[in-house]
Image (tube, rainbow, N blue to C red):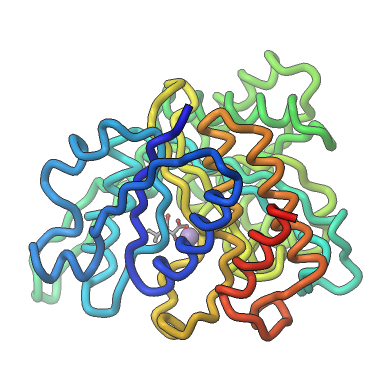
Length: 350
Ligand code: IPM
Ligand code: MN
């Protein structure tokens, strides 16, 4: 059965890395039916919106969106992102963002004395509420008393679904069967405390999982000092956003990190798969961006599409390319985006 996948290559290096992810997936011979969506910052300049008004309808026949990156210096970030990726996450209720953080053999990591075996963390990011709820406002513009209010919103249902997923991941994943939940309940008294309470309630349902509650600032330090002590980490939208950039650095750079925006409680629903790096306008058009994060995101997409064997093959091809080279500059090599993509394809067709 062939799968219909929408490609939102987007801005900056997005089209460059997505092209390689697509070629790699095509080499698996699944007969994916790709549809390109021209949305993004250039589209905004033509139409005054990042995506068409009927975007939801246009996406209705798809099970997956492979997204490159959105963002361009010519459009304010809060406009481009609330008009695209944040809108997709919220309107499609893609409440979970899975971000595997592994240091692949062959990729130089920044932590002294740390080997690939030491870095294998799955981040489960709450993806629709918390600090990204989009609630707030501005008043008294331009006056000395001007205010900006940004409200974090935590619901019991929102906490419960993402925490339950994280417990399930920790129960199923080979590894430490440890779930680390990061909040900041010493300084914040409401939302994170609700989160903590729901987590402790759920912990009783998962006797095989060791649950720990940590403060997010302490967790940041622990990720650097002892990443090997972590297994599954669950955190709110903003905290996990920050922790996964740190995680990306630990796994060898932003170009390596992948993500899946999904709604696991709705089997058969659409998912959005994107590398964690942004549009990187500073290197866009040079053909040097690392396609690994995009290719890894395609692995997550194949899992979502119910193609676990193809997903495993693609991940293996990515791993072997990282191990043997070629690698892009950010990963210690000299190769182009395309050359890395070629190597992944070659490994799949060998
Ligand atoms: C990410 C990105 C986005 C986020 C931005 C582009 C809005 O940093 O996916 O991590 O903060 O979620
Ligand atoms: Mn981020």
